Amino acid sequence: MVWGRLPALAAVVVIVGLAFGIRSVSDGGLEQYSGTALYASMIYAGVFLLWPAVAPVRAGILAVGFCWALEFFQLTGVPAALSERSPVARLVLGASFDWVDVAWYPVGVVPLVVLHRLVSRRGAGSAATAGRGSRVGSPPG
Image 1 (cartoon, rainbow, N blue to C red):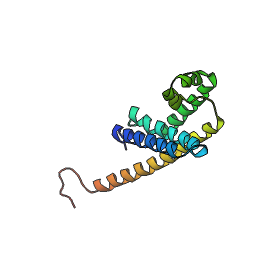
Image 2 (cartoon, rainbow, N blue to C red):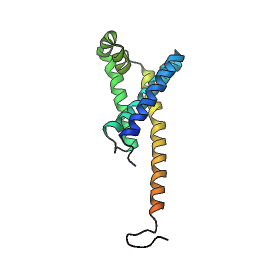
Image 3 (cartoon, rainbow, N blue to C red):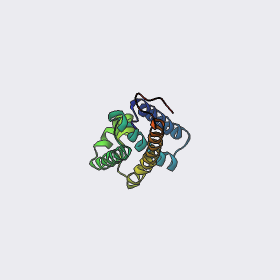
Image 4 (tube, rainbow, N blue to C red):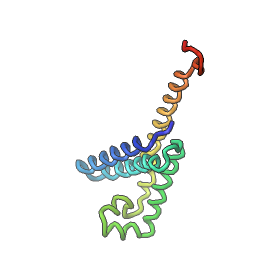
């Protein structure tokens, strides 16, 4: 099942809205950890914006790998320097490395991969059932 760009874009918008909603009513651990997991969820949906036909497991691996790469990039100090100048850079790149973030990225992705696979299988099963017994040129039934 191809997820498609429009549902992926909608998912990105919903995830970002949820993250900002949580941020507006909470601070501390809930904000940080949910923000980290939702960031990874957004990246997962973003993979489908770039590559709509990718398999869910591959998209999950790409999303978590990207998040981990960005987290380790923070060790260079470049994201921190950019974050001082731009709130957008802070939201996108972060500012400092945190092992806790490394652990929370899969928390934002793995449930989506599982859900995506379940929905994809259910959709494939429905399509296969609908096509049973019908051949081109034969009457149905």
